[in-house]
Amino acid sequence: MRVVIARCSVDYTGRLTAHLPLATRLLMVKADGSVLVHSDGGSYKPLNWMSPPCSMAQVDPTEDERETGVVMTWSVQHAKSEDRLRVLIHEVLHDSSHDLGVDPGLVKDGVEAQLQALLAEHIHTLGDGYSLVRREYPTAIGPVDIVCRDAGGATVAVEIKRRGDIDGVEQLTRYLELLNRDPHLHPVSGVFAAQQIKPQARVLAQDRGIRCVTLDYDALRGIDDATTRLF
Image (cartoon, rainbow, N blue to C red; front, side, top):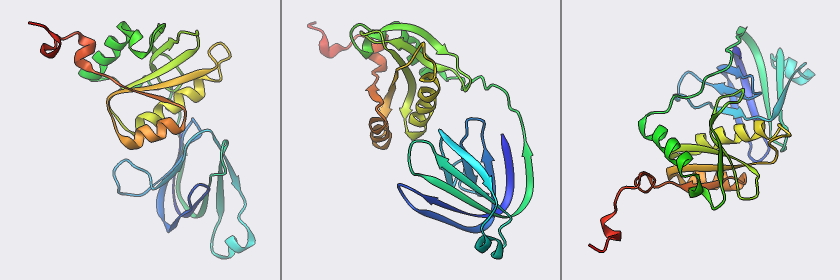
């Protein structure tokens, strides 16, 4: 990971246009290629970012940019769209790179871990003919909750959450990008499974061809439902 603190302005063009005026910010370039722009506030969420797959080039500023004090320009281009992030750096206050190694992934809390175990045991919940390949399928960016095969033998990656939001969809998207590079697995489709899925996450998932499944924890556990009994 590369960590840069710099006085910079940022322009994002593509599906939308956004501008961040000149200020001191934290720039992060991660091993997966993503670029994030943070301020000293706003909790964990970046002010602007580019998700992989994308490429970043450090280029010389134009003459007009030099006249305004720009000493370095980052040009970040998304590989599958016209989205572009352009960072105009006026002063670098800190620049360092760190090898964080392979992350073991998020340790699930009780209910989420149990959801994973129950869904793996009852994988047919996702559809007739589904079969389990492995839980916690290892990848270079962390373990996929469940990898299975559908009735036609195609590979399916499943991300499980208690409450499904946009971050979960982004996480599954990164897994799918990586898994689809493996010729032994390609093509890999995705299933986003949660007890509750936020509308925005559902729209994003559907836009990316990811199927959403709402999980009933009690039904997976096999708890007796009094409304379905005769006596």
